[in-house]
Length: 268
Length: 255
Image 1: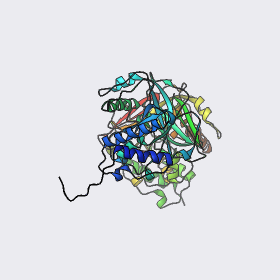
Image 2 (image 1 turned 90 degrees about the vertical axis):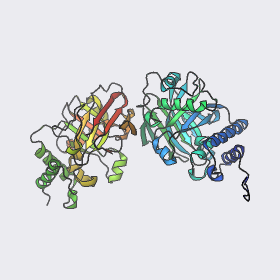
Image 3 (image 1 turned 30 degrees about the vertical axis):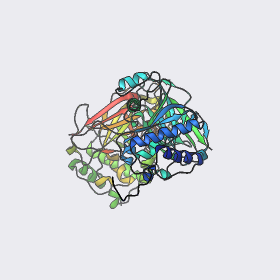
Image 4 (image 1 turned 135 degrees about the vertical axis):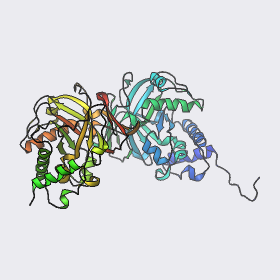
């Protein structure tokens, strides 16, 4: 027992989840959780995420319909000083159709990124899933946009901050067709994203962890340590193919992906 | 007074001696048309009487154009013997300061000419497309140059590697994904649209520019349409690979 130290009551995962829930509800960003508690581990952060998801489901934000991967590119990993990705749930109320109008004031500091979305046809249980098995379990691919948003002030995030905050997910927009994934080489599937008609960025599937299918295998194997299996019909957002850029009311964004078609949204 | 022959001799000597020189514009004023005159004269010194068949385009991305504060691309020609054949390594010592760019190359099946050639006309005249690596080697120390300098210096053209041509068929060139790897590590990704929105649009610009200089692009020409990513420096021991959509890949070993 150390003596003479006034122990500050450590915040529980539920406390952090409450703070993030309020930040989402009030669109008022909060201090990094890693500053509120510098001892937070990755395990703690996923516990906070879990508590936050429970609160959101209880609050009518729908059910978990899939997952998003974050930090799947080397530049993002280097920025946060990590060497692996992270994940968060996609809730049904976050998912929008092609051409959706998204209200920017529903978010705090939204940015947009184009991704390859994958739809599972068969369940996948880690921890020993190979890319071959992951490829076999994936049924379809869809052009997708992810609106990322941070409930942490000025995007001042470390790994645990983004994990706790649903991996900074805000919304997902899906193209109108799901293409059979059989025979597609997702690594070299090209993407061009335009903002008001101007090309902002291009990329290819390999930007997501070297291969979007490898991202699926990583997710299945990581979820296994939490006893979670990926289920048929779930959507997997495999990670950004370019650097995310901020959006504002009045903006129109559209991404075209080779053989997957196109997906767009506008901001009001 | 601009002296085309003297500047061309300086550049040709830099190529032959593998020695970097200061930018020409440190000494002389050079406009773009004069710079292309110097390019022509330099090519004639390096490769007298040869038919120019393989061209390269540069400054085809908005980012690069903004960086150089210009609003048009540039072109250069490869001299005979610039092709690096598959499986043959490139000797880094044969160049000054090589950098590599992944590109989409088009081979023409019909002559292209005229001041108002359009992207669809280029596509109609395209016999095949292939993945390519463009090995740059600026003759200016540290790649420090203005637009007229780099035009005179043949767009930094040095070597190139081509994959096998495949028919264009219904491929969408803007959406062909590019994956650039060095020694098995992912370096960058992009898509064809990184080149002026469409690689064939860059070729259309090239044909219009040639028309302006009283020339055309004959059938059987090969055009490396411009870099899809930022150029990467290479050193002995490196293996660079570019995979381009369904066109396959092309690789360069450096020794």
